[in-house]
Length: 239
Image (tube, rainbow, N blue to C red; front, side, top):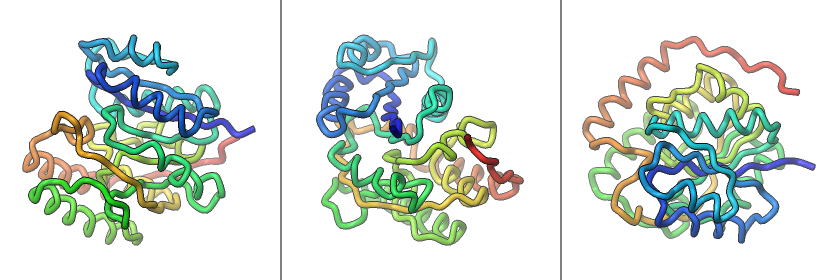
């Protein structure tokens, strides 16, 4: 039987995390759920555990990239075959988990990005964010040779080979957005997209971006440049 883990990174999401977990359980009750509590100052950990998730906690806030890599290491150590990643603030609609995971389960692709821009009604980001997204969409699509419409989406699904690959130092912990896709492409993984629904973040911010837009764009460009210069080893066989 193939094992699937739903990974939910969370920082100070005590108000919403239980609702997200229950919604995921309602869609895919057979999947395990892991919440990586990234040094929250509220009751995120206890709320997640009470809702039925396994919780791994950082003592301090380490950042989004470190939080999700902790989840990947947990998945690898516990020999999960597939992983679905969803935000803990309720922004990602869990109803789309089966659609997101389907091409990975079928062996058609290694890594699937859930896109809010593919014919499913979702919230509309601010004008400035849309401009930034459009820029990185064109840049990343050109680099990887595949049209990617939502390069900052944290709603993802991937197989065991990607899980193992992302537990290594090759994973771009600082800015795991466009860099993640470029690293996968350079390593020879197959990337695809499916439409999903996303809602606006309830508090108007996102753990996934977390920086002022101009600073974020500058750092992301610098990070992409460094990634393009890196030598990425092809992943070996995964038992």
